[in-house]
Amino acid sequence: MQIELRKEYGQTDIENLVEAFAEKYTSIPKLQQTIELTKCTKPMMVDDFFIWKALSEGAKYTESTFITYAEVFNVLTARRVELLEYLEHHKPASIIEIANALNRDYKNVYDDISALEDAGLITTQKKGRNVLIQSTVNSIIISFQ
Amino acid sequence: MMEVTKQVVFIHKDEKIVMIEITEDGKLKYFAYTYMTRERHGSWVPAVRWDNFEGISHVEKYDENGGLIERVETEYRTKNEIKQLVQTFRKNLLAMHLGGM
Image 1 (cartoon, rainbow over the protein chains, first blue to last red):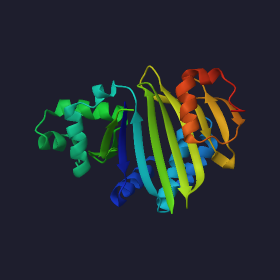
Image 2: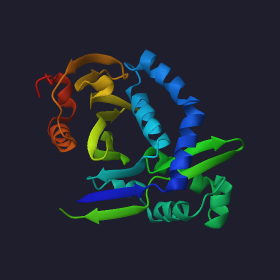
Image 3: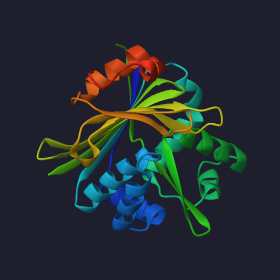
């Protein structure tokens, strides 16, 4: 069995991604300086540098996650899939907004967001007093190999 | 046209390969294939990484804290070859000589 979680980023998604890089690292030259000093200890920062640079130059972006173990269904519960679907169509500014829209308890939504973020299926980004929550998935394909 | 693709392959709930490729007009400009493990406190750390940072294809090994312990030049391997290699050897990769592979 293989599960493919896929997202093709539209223009707005890419702009949000670039904005998140800017918030995290300030500027591309500054990140370049940082990786020259820390490339041996933080290799994933090198990836961020090249991705950010390419996106700033107009690159397309596609992200896929492949999972081959059945335990993933511990993460992908019906409620969490519903949450992913909601995030695909809405841009909520807070967890309360999601909880209200889905008619769910705040704590349960918070726990689901933590679990999905831990599995890399959503990203969260603080924006002032709000948290921008985005899905990294817009399709889930299950195939039996 | 430039394209960025990121593929994450979970081979176990605590082990994954993060594969980044940047192509321009179909030509591979940058790649980084990183085998990562999840530590007890929940964070992901790199274990073995193949990339062409600074234009040279090389493989790196990291300790359990994510500190670089070895870096050697190696020939380019496709992401499918790396995926196969990681799925076969997993954490044993750290004890293997990868420079010639």
